[in-house]
Length: 510
Ligand code: ME8
Image (cartoon, rainbow, N blue to C red; front, side, top):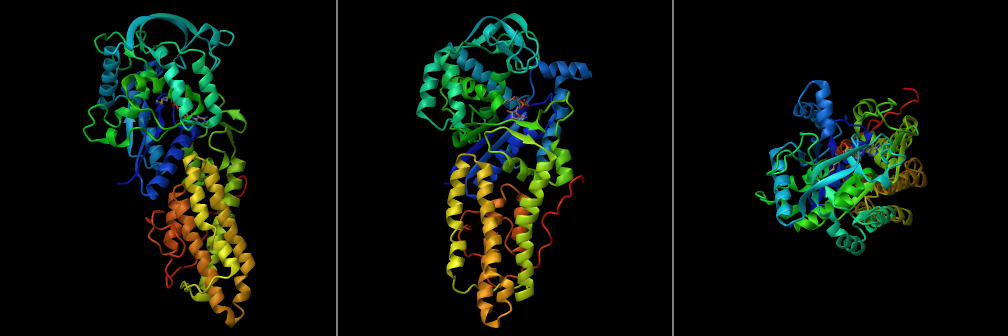
């Protein structure tokens, strides 16, 4: 039976429209999903939207619409963007769906029956935009330590989750499972947060009504994180599991999130799961933060980068490539149009595009576009062709660490090696000597076969480009890596026409 792989994005709030930050996380999950499928895994890739809470209620009131009308309107912007960016999610969960509400209600009842949810009273400093309570000591000069805005003291009846009972068990889990929180640099931050002592967590509100009612006490709505985090199991049909998805895909292989919501995923969520007796996620990966031309992205600075606009201007595949190539996953990065343009011109138009047009042009010129059978490999050929097996193995390991930029670096080392192989073997000189005809055929075969393997590795990042290269090479564009990643599968006799440039160069200022 195929190995399974379950990966999730955060569910995005519907009170904001999608920008490159959201696209980044979703793209990363898409790339790893496509890679794992190509390797024969049975993949479940989940994304969705977080639709409850005070912010949505307030925004809807201000617009003169109901919260659900607002959610219905904004969710389409996410869904159409994912379609445009070629996102291959298997499911899309909305927290307003019945399937989700049912799971949250059942979780609540289960933990309440166990004594892990109890009714108490809450008093603390509340940041409305962040929907987060802070203790007095966490505030920065009285303001929210996350967003810097004003906080207000709130006291209300609230249900609490007995998070304080689970701190020791969670530390033990983190210590015994070194891959649980990634990147590693973030583990210590979480461990010290837990060591400071976990307080019981307020998980309901009476101050607004847009949410899932607390069962049996409907003046409370279930507070946003208890609601939102549960999406990862409600989408699988927990607890009824009529379709067997939970049984098959849980525990999740990776929750991919931004560093802003690591604590919720690495502390709150695992303790909810422990209380419910559900196994913990295998990995929580917190990636870094994008700024734009050196500044924080924000509506008020009017510098929000809309992926729709970028895709229209530069094409979907270049954007997909750029976001994952530019910055090591896990570190912060800065978006600038000039670095995007320079990557498109140098990596895509020059390195990748020229390689294909040069080699297909030579095949046309020297062999009428019909791929010759290769003769024996010289030392120089062996050095080149021998790179691909180890590179495939290296890439597979890099995916386990979500090191997307290193995967791309490794692929681009192969592309550079291919360009260098052309320069070193100088096919144009071989072509002058009829005695070198077989040697010339070997060189061209190796070059084009190399590009078949390169295209297979490129496809998770740039699905259209990968398919296009495979088609040019006369290979079925749906070919996967599994069983097709060893050297020498390109069939002699295949007709390969001269390829048009894959990526037009972009002049600065265009
Ligand atoms: O937090 N750089 O939703 P959200 C990189 N609903 N990534 C960014 C980013 C940036 N500048 N801005 C946003 C929520 N992101 C909750 C989640 S999950 C159970 C509930 C990405 O709409 C990043 O993945 O605020 C971040 O974690 C997420 O968007 C926050 O999305």
